[in-house]
Image (cartoon, rainbow, N blue to C red; front, side):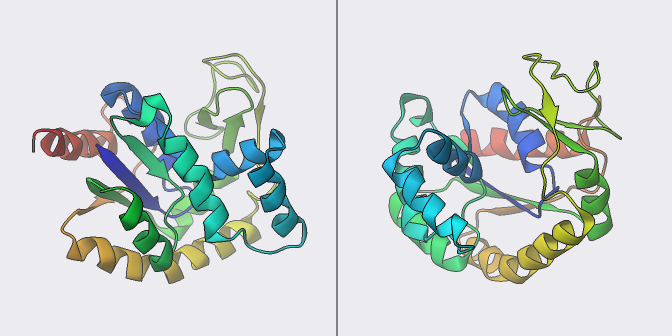
Length: 217
């Protein structure tokens, strides 16, 4: 199954993907994580991307596509993946169509006030990348990941002003993407305004219901 996760920052894509990847045995591929790793490892692609970022420019689609292609060739992605952070534009969606055949697009619908509340308390593990929330999904030990015991941190761009701008950018971009995948009859919209990951999480259950149906086709 090749699944795209769409949603505003704070919609829960990373949290749900971390659960779904264990259920279906497919990796969670975040293009943002791929980019940061390439820069950290000082690969040719990463250094090229860093040049644009240091100049305050967007990283060209070609660079992101190269990183994505390399990741999709790895053994763990041969049976599918959960793709997070790409595509963001209709142009990127059309490029992706030429690379892989998408099974389904899960679109997490979330209100702006919910996004602001979630991201204001978001904590990310420096080791495994697991996501927590100081308000709704706190770690058992403050500042420490439950899974790998590495340090948790808060992203520098998780401020109200930046979050609001990112949400507006998402709103401006999502309509053509939504129409594109709706025309392919692979778009599934899910109400993601409920609290993230609870004992009987309706959002996670809805995702599993959709993916179980797709896996049988």
